[in-house]
Length: 207
Image 1 (tube, rainbow, N blue to C red):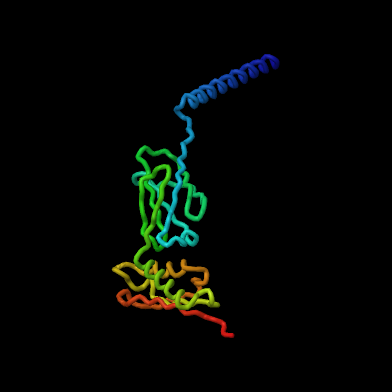
Image 2 (spheres, rainbow, N blue to C red):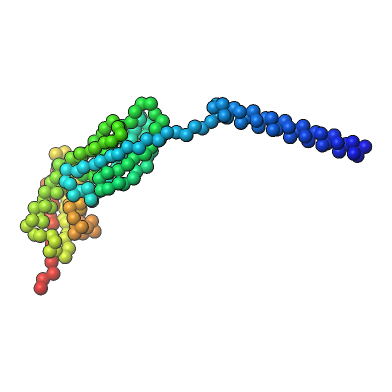
């Protein structure tokens, strides 16, 4: 009786194993036939060049990009090729096309329909131009390279220019050169209707 029962158990176990193998085979067949397969989503890479109205800003700032397909925001990887060229790579799973926007502090953002290669020529805002021109004039008069330190006193960011914020003026001053540091900026509290103040003071060691 013991041997006979063992035989039944053995046969029963074989049947169960065979049934499981058949079920797994059916599942695999369904996956291969495509109903449950997660196919690899194709990717798209685009070359993006960003040029600035003030050309030396290519070495001072890095732009941000936003990619949309309709109302859907697309995540991407960004690779820096050189000072103003980038390669953006993202999953190409939309039939609606893509729109890309480039933006940088101090510059007016631009948008384009995505193609294989894109060039943005960004224009500076009015406040950025003012801050840049004032700083360049001060440099010509005072010769920044001879200074030990430069102090900036300003109301930028508080006052308005043509009805818009003037914080871009301070951005322009800071982007002008390595001599001007944010830690040396003194912000004056003022009202939005008052005039913009941009004051640059040089510290020089006297011999």
